[in-house]
Image (tube, rainbow, N blue to C red; front, side):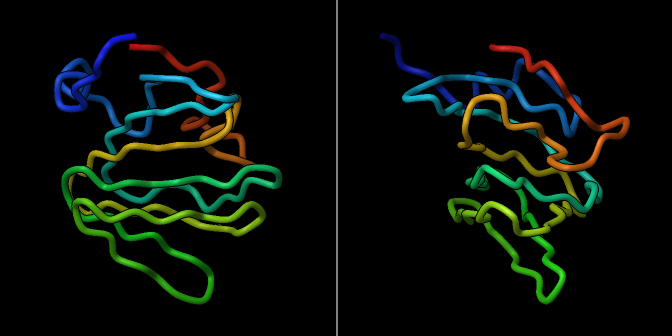
Length: 119
């Protein structure tokens, strides 16, 4: 057991759209990521995802609406719901999702990360 400082972990990387694993529990992974710009439209058929904004402003786009998340706000995207995170300025997020969840869900492209680094 050890305590984890989110901001210390965030200081260990600078690239965007490349989540890092910072913890695991009960088949779930806690991840940190830095985001900037629009991501790809995608969905996860079998996994719900939690996005907690730590720094910056994140817009979560859905096909029928968009939600804006400020620091200390989170959203749970239910499985099967198509979505696209958009960060006009740099954003840092904590993600909580089942182990093995592919960051691009049902889409494969240059942003797909098949293997994530643990930090």
